[in-house]
Image (cartoon, rainbow, N blue to C red; front, side, top):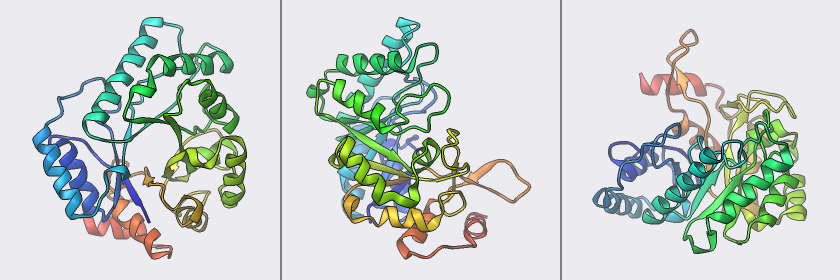
Length: 300
């Protein structure tokens, strides 16, 4: 099972990311190359990078199983302020270069929100922006993430994703599935094989390069986008276990983005990462009804 989680990119940069993934017994990981909510980016430390590669070799983590995620502040769909739209394009171009430096093959991108535009206009703005990136010249591939359809989000249907893919003048673009987003967008994760058949008929299953494995706090077709811990949401453990073990996508990295856990039921601050325990639970193939308590006991 190729599985990991979102990890941090802090003072030790890529080395710190790999160390964190190793602490979760993961063989895949996803990182931001800086804070996802702002534009500050430190220079890549190549010495730390070399040490990270050595640790990855020791722990049998392949570089193709490392995923980057573009920051949330990028919005290619909204062109109301052309200066902001151009900034998003240039910032994404810089993120692609950082991925190339780190030899990271895939960078996940939220397609964007149309805001004051129509959905059709928003999708056309995304296509125009992606074509300005000259993706054929990049060593890294952009993966469009399937979205929940919250507000004016683009990319919440397979048809919208297909329209973007067809409009981009490059084959260097793929798709990242998100189980919570798909559920909230109206795709039943209890019927994942049927979903894959649908995806294959509309887009082509070969375009799936990453899957975010998340439970959902909301019912099917709610268009809310609120992640839940594995087995503690409306999708459920059994369905998510079938997804991570599905033979059709066995070579695709699975990445957890589930919520951190609070100190106790009365505490609102989320401080404990659940990934070590959720990864173990999925590998074991047996639901842990004491997951939250086990996580709290481990980190206290």
